[in-house]
Length: 83
Image (cartoon, rainbow, N blue to C red; front, side):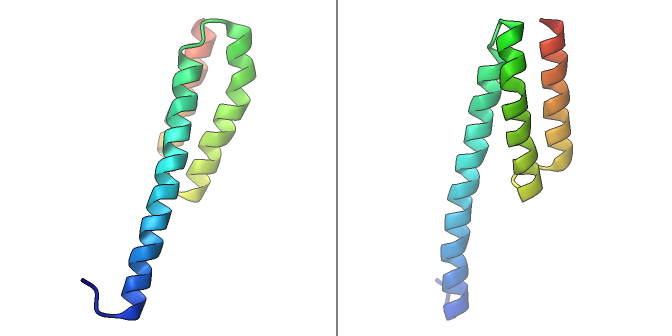
């Protein structure tokens, strides 16, 4: 157990941020799955801007790496163009 007041606070803030990051990462994965399972090209094209915006926001916050964000968006573009 931590002895210093600042380290106790750091433990609390780390736990709070970890839960927030897990929530946002799960939301992104659900949106990706929903988009990947879409068979209609028009529906996929309508969902694409919101999903790419979400990916960019998470990369900007540091929840996912910027290269991972680029790879995810590239894969989505390839999948939608192949429909």
